[in-house]
Amino acid sequence: MFFKLTKEQQDQMISDIQTFFFQERDEELTEFAAERVLDFVKESLAPHFYNAAISDAKHVIVQQFASLEDELLTLERPLNK
Image (cartoon, rainbow, N blue to C red; front, side, top):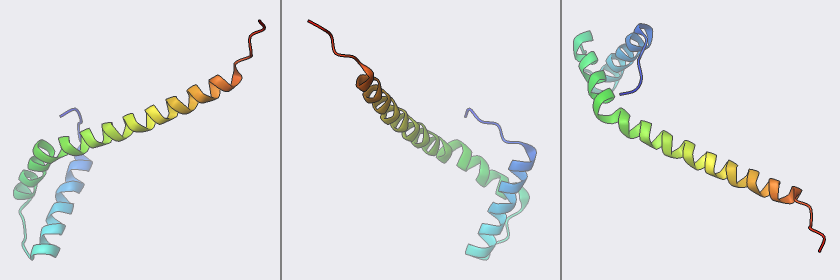
């Protein structure tokens, strides 16, 4: 993937995964097991979220460009014939 996590971010995510599994499944995960879950999410699921975010950003940019185009058209002066 295109992103790098800092050591602090990765450690926090691993901790969050361990907490989630304990609270939701009453299962204690080792740090290694939680890291494997994180690797799975990064490799298999994150690209879907990344692509959705890119699509959302593209939609916003297209809307802003259309708005800018409309504003520019209002600045045009009529031509004398």
